[in-house]
Length: 631
Image (cartoon, rainbow, N blue to C red; front, side, top):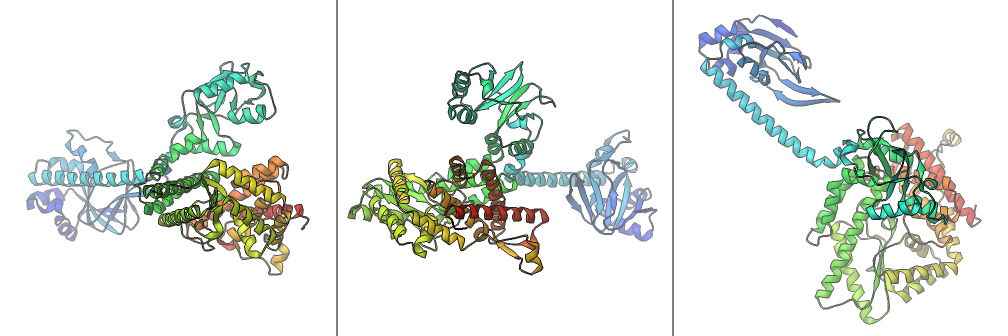
C-alpha cells in the first residue's frame, strides 16, 4: 500500500465522490488539501483489525471487503466505488477531544486494485458544522445501520435453521440435570432401586465421604444383581461401578458425547472445577445430549402422528432430520434408532387412519391382525425412505375377513406411497396374496417354503427372516412367533439351503498383495451386496438356528452372544464393523451415489477400515457356514 499527496487528476476524481460532491467548491477544496492518496493492490490489507483508525476512507476506484477472522475468514460486506470505509468509528468525530485508541475489530482488504482517499478524523472535526457534510454522514451511517440489521436478521434465520447442529457446542452445564439422586455405599441395593423408582431416574450416584465413589444404573441392577440372583439386601458397593468416568460442568456437549462413546456408557456424573474428585453438581445422560441436540427434530417428529399433517411432507422432513443427525456426527446406531422410530410412527399413523376410514364406512375389523415390516425397516436400519417391505397376518379365515383385509392392505399401500415409500419391485407387500393371509394360511406357507426350497422361495425367506412386529394384536403376534419357531424346528433343511446360497456368494477378498500383483484386486465394492447383505444373512441364519426369528441387528448380535454362539469380543467387533460399513453406506446414499464405492476414492484411513470390516464379516460368514459343515 502506498500513501502519497493528491495530484490534479486524483483531485477531480475525489471531488466527484458523494462525500465532496454536495459541498461548496471552496469548502471541498479546503478539506481536500488535508487528505491523502492511497493505492492498494488486489487482496492486500487496507486496515488491520484492532489497528488505530485515522479517518474515513473514500473508495474512488475498485472494491473493498470488510472481513472478520475467527477460525476462518468471513466477509461482512463489500464496499464498492463511491462507498466509505470507517463509518463505524464516526463517533470519534463527535468527541471534543480525540481518543487516540480509535480502532475496529474488523479487517478491510482490497478485493481488487483500489484507489482510496483518506479523510483524517482530526480534519473532519473542523468541518463538522458544514450542513451538507453533517447530513450526508448521518444519512450514510443510518443506511449502513439498516443494512447491518437486515444482515443480522438474515443470519439469525439461518442460525435458527442450524440450531440442531450448533447446540452440540453448548456446555454440559446448559443441559445437565442439577438434581442428582444419591445413595451411600453402605445402603442396600433395594434402597438404590427404590430411589431410582421413586425419582424416575435410571441411575444413582454413590457418595463416599461426600465425593463420587461410584455409579449404579438400572442395567447394573439387571445384569449384576437380578441375573445372578444377588440378594437386594447386599450393599450398593458390591454392584456399583467404582470410580466412574466424570465430566466437568464447563466441558462441551461433544466432549460428553465422545466420553460416552469411548467408554460405552450412557450416564456421566458432572463435577465442579477441573478435577475428577470435585463436588458433584449434576448428571448428564446420552438421552439428554441427543434431546438437546435434536429438540427441533424431535418436536417435528411428533407432527407426523397428527392425521392433518400432509403425508407428502414426510420425505423432506425425514431428509432434514437425517441431515441434522449426520452433521452432528451422531453415532450410527442412534441415527438408525431415531430414523426407524420416525418411520414406525408413519406406518402406525397410516394403519390407524385406514382402520378409522373403514370404520367410518361401517366396516369394522372382523378379527384381530398383526402387521409386520421386513428388510431394512425390520432390522431397524431404514435411515431414509426406500421401498415398502411388509406383510399382514389375520386371526381367522373367511370370505368376509379376506375382503376386509384385502381392501385394508391396498389402502395402506396407497397411503404409504404418498409419503415417498415406493412400491416393492419384488411385490413383497401386504396387498399381495403371498404376503397376507390368516394364521392358518401362514402356517401352510411356511411349510411350503420349507418343503419346496426353490430359488424364489429362498429369496422370500431371506427377506422374511428380517421381520419385525409393528402394529396390531400382541397375542396374535405371540401365536405367529410360536408357529414360525415350531416350523423351523421341523425343517432344518431350509436353513441348510439358505446357508448353501450364502456359500455361493462369499464376501470378497480385499487387500491381498498377491492379488494386486496378479492384477486381480477389486476396484469397487458394493457396500450393500458385498458386505451388508452377507452380514445380515449370516446373522439371520445363525439366529434362526438358535430359535430366534426377529429383532434388530443389535438385538440379534446380543442374542447370539447370550447363546454362546459368538464371544462377547467378537460380537463387539461385529457391531463396530457393521457401524463402520453402515456409516459409509449412509454417506453414499446421502450423496445419491448408490451403494458402490470406488476404493481409489477413499482415504487411507477409510480404506483400512473397509478392509477390516470385510475381513471380519467374511470370518463371520465362514463361522455361519461351519455351523452347517459347509466350509
